[in-house]
Length: 192
Image (cartoon, rainbow, N blue to C red; front, side, top):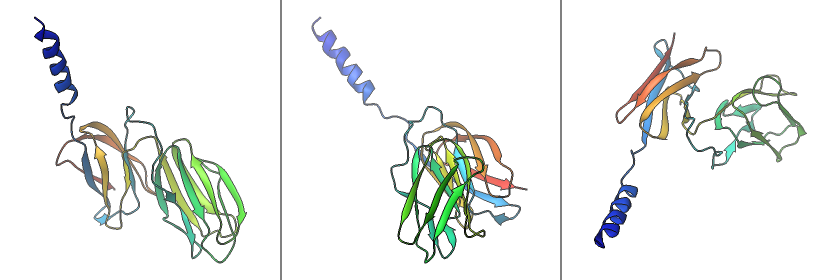
């Protein structure tokens, strides 16, 4: 009879160390018609995911009178660094949807910071240089990616499940649908 508590404790220990479903990389492509669609932001809704900002440093650079990258995706709560690496002053701002801010005039070698504290698209401009434009998409999920120049993307460490996906690209309508993420799943998206 005294072995019963020991046996139950052993079963609980085994149950607690059983491997969980392994997260996988969800690969996919973004296309417009028959050509690759770079700079598309793709994300999966995940309401049960932990709510923390990105751990890595995120930079939206200003160089050669341009923003680099021109499309950036971040998790809500992430601080984005805006360094001025040009030889001229810049005044970075966003007054439209998403995060509204105005960083004021600042010279080469300095930087400003913005916390993207709610989901949405922010259109970024320079008040001095009207040809400068970029986009920051803040998403409330850890599962997101931006497609490369070949229209390919990978969303890392996604637990197998069914998700609602979203895709956004400048000048295109948003795509939304459902995807079952399991080993071997590919999410191939196409704007028409």
